[in-house]
Length: 312
Length: 67
Image (cartoon, rainbow over all chains, first blue to last red; front, top):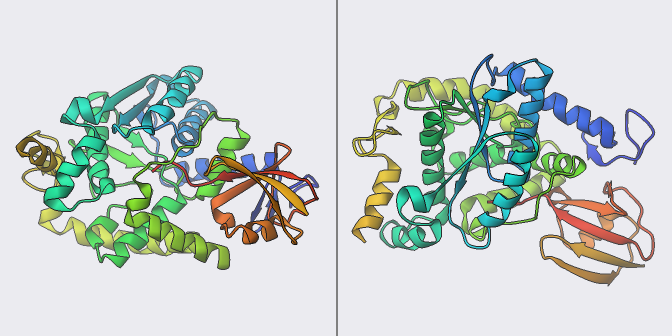
């Protein structure tokens, strides 16, 4: 297969034809920069905190955020990286090695916080205790604590925005998961800019890779020769998301454009979902009575889980 | 034809004999979804339509990683 723009060999077959290495890189970067501009994900003089793990998505978004700032003559010294070490044996320590090297090479200051340090236990140790009382899966526990620590430390570091590496596949999966579980409250918090409202306690999360398929992100990271060792979270197959991911990949293979279709349809409904949820008092962000961090209840979910562990 | 395959996800190399001609045939033969893999031959990423040759050495890189 040849590139639809030149005669070189294609590295990917897209809906509108194949692209060679150079044309794919241009196409991918343009798509990310257009997303940033269209949804105003980055403002002039904002302090930007990129949530990083050392995987393909976060290294790509970190690299392209810096490139966007340079291209638009915006200050790059406002760019920082923040990683959360969940404490998953034989997994996170490997990606953190690549991450430290990457941040050093690209001169981006990196802060690493850990579940163990902040919440008293690693995920490996905390999850069986919480699961016993609540039946929560590892991904539920990890998701709550990760978001909690990212918001807390991004705020502490003075960030105006948290930039995440969520891609098209992540978003399509989340939309379907919420739909299958009739969870319109959570659905209203999706989109290129996460959350329902702006609030002093909550640092807005933005997603420049929103329209990039996971396969495209992996290809971009590979072509840019980012040092990424293949790792897979040992808990990932236990989650509901994994089944949705397989289902959507099967559909995408049979019906090209399925994931994009899901996200595009969702975006037309998103303003309605946000309006509906903003009118509901119980979704208002307030201060957790235990830790004073952002919460939509009297005590935030992270503190509830922390108490479960302390009382065990 | 005979193809040598390194599967990144499983971290192992295997040699297979199969009757197809393209990368797509190979992935179908291995029961792998092309959405979840990138295929590399001689350090070049190739598409599903690419024709394979006898004794080709292929790397299957997992698109899905992390959590």
